[in-house]
Length: 306
Image (cartoon, one colour):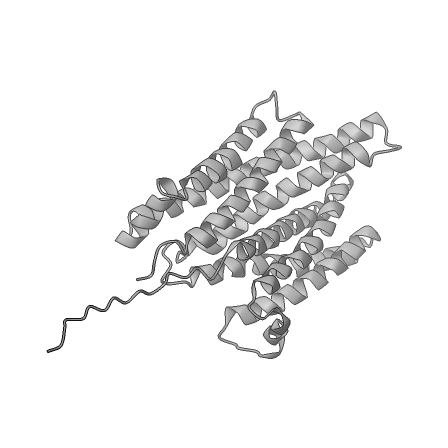
């Protein structure tokens, strides 16, 4: 006589994407945001904006060169990363991403060279070439997440746009910090008038950043509202962000620390004309955007698929 046997199947809940992927998304966003602001400054044609253009021209390729290192480190077999370039799959977004990660930094480096050699004609040419590449490099990361049909937090048409707008926010914040360091420690020989004029450019960037923060928060609000009013799984994802284990990062760090407090600093007349305050707002913004990348990447995998 056979005994009754109970068999329990335990399928482990894996999270293939971790902090290295979040850092990759973050660095590509810093690069794209810095490049776009640099191009706006260069194409604007005004002489006073050129220092900002030069800062962004350097930051864009530097951040972009650092970004793929996170992808390589995240691979189980890092030595085989070159396969991405020699095995072309026209149906894979990662294939096109590999091409973009190669062409964009080359274009951005050439652009930076012409910016620093004051070749305005060629700088503008590579600015025009680089803009779609910069947007594509960061936009495709959001596009890849949006293709994750089983991940309700990712599978939204807003994801690429949300990534691009938040990239602008973080890129501007980084440029403000670097520009402030330049104003304080690399301004030997400047007149007081030149220093104040340079500070005015930084404060102008702060206003620009405030506008992009508002746009970012608007997209984020739409995303959360759609999650709450969509399927039951989507509701659970929104609940996790607002009231669950990711609430401290999402509400506390991303929304309050990384958006609301910087907006208050940048909107109050007593603080939006003080260099330390604008830099504090920029630092908080950068922390908040990183929290956003982490919450999206890791939080998107926290809800089991089964």
